[in-house]
Image (tube, rainbow, N blue to C red; front, side):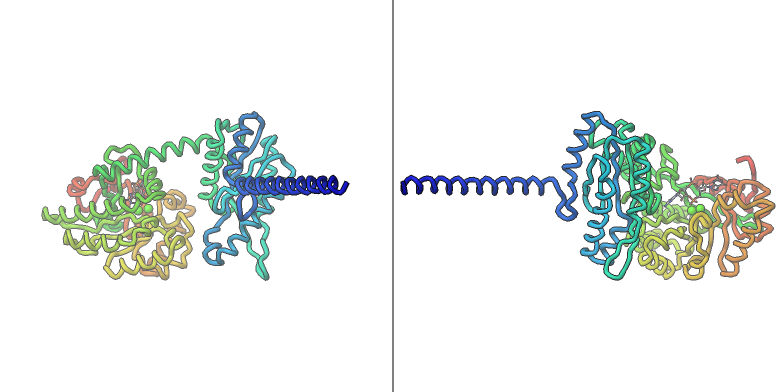
Length: 459
Ligand code: C2E
Ligand code: CA
Ligand code: CA
């Protein structure tokens, strides 16, 4: 009997041990599965799981929305407040987003960095609009850390199943395109995907290819637009404006694309060399030379050696610095002030003059005119178009007065008619640049200009 009981107990023990072991294996397996499907920090699903979920969803043919969410200024939070704080912000936003989708069938994933991907299913476009509206209100509320409150905002890009993505990759790419547009619009923006975004992307791709080719094969050419003294009509200098030799795209199209890549750095140097070499050639052929203005993009601030490159060009072609002017935009004071201030200081030390371009189109806080070392302001064509008329031209008059009181010169751009020219002359603007005197022309045409220039409305 005893023997029998012992055998029974042994069996039971063995069974328990086996059960424990199987339990352990199952738990381990679940753990591995969890880790493979989730993000370690926020415990949300990860990219891989989201893609899989979306694939199933597209296959099933149900309606859905994919929403990409990106935290505004996350990088600077992370850098100024530390990574622990950054992690807290991420977890907080993750919680808010998770709470916001509970009433829907769907999922939330961390898509890497400060990007989240939300998928909600069986929804109408109205449901999505309502949802996005509520999400924005929730995310925007201040998050408390210790004693302090911080306003966290997000951008979102939204695509719907009616956008007919064929694959999960396509759906995510659409949401991402919309998210990028939202980010360009500024903080707290929400944008729906549309078909044009995709064709824009194709165009952008083609422009990028054209630019790369032009950089390699000397595919750029400079046009020069004359600037005249408003009082006398005399030619006083010109602005260098870049063109593609094959004219495949306008500068208004290709400059922004160049600025979004590193290409602007190379292009900025190409323009600079071409202009300085042109000045050298004019000089070589015994012509009187005049200052040429070069457009400088704020994205060129990443080119830390630009100033020494410019100096090198001036030395190589033996051109005194007063024949080159650099046109900057006010965006530069906002974007990267340390690098910008260094640039202004370096250029000023070299005796290169700075002109503030596109005045009136951006923030135009008059304040910075008192400390940025520009010697000239260029009033943008949009100001001319909107204000140069009987009712409103006082405004331009005041701008000119203000500039003069700060000992700055004023160039008025986009003057196309005799009437506009006369008005600026009366208001004592200093220089005029516009089609009334000349469109941008070739270097050879510059040599043939009569001086003083004669205005003409029918160019
Ligand atoms: P921007 O610097 O404001 O240049 C002035 C633009 O206004 C030029 O256009 C010029 O052709 C145009 N314009 C001048 N007068 C008139 C006028 O009376 N009527 C009209 N309708 N337009 C006038 P463009 O050459 O197409 O250049 C467009 C923009 O592309 C420039 O605006 C500038 O921001 C950028 N860009 C051009 N070349 C360069 C370059 O070498 N480097 C950089 N970074 N940007 C450049
Ligand atoms: Ca300019
Ligand atoms: Ca301008």
